[in-house]
Length: 81
Image 1: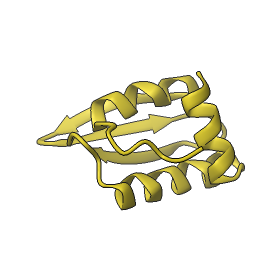
Image 2: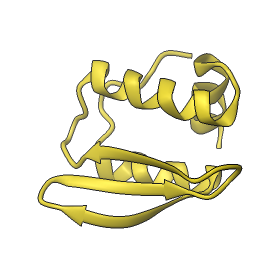
Image 3: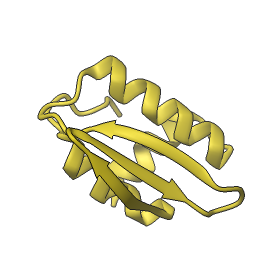
Image 4: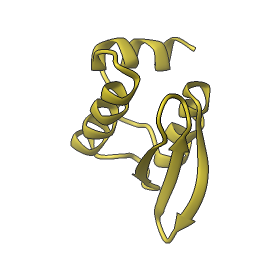
């Protein structure tokens, strides 16, 4: 599955709740999420609509590494829900 090209930061943050990520703070146009699944993990997502594809790809790679799965597996699980 391809990464959606029209997803915004706030919408993406909501999708990540099913993987244990919760919004911990927002500063300006950036949303900080924290996961306590395994070790504590922090990511920052720009609250832009749409997110740039490179930015989204890097965030997905970081999350996939934390969850010990491939990026393509993660993409399929996120947009399957």
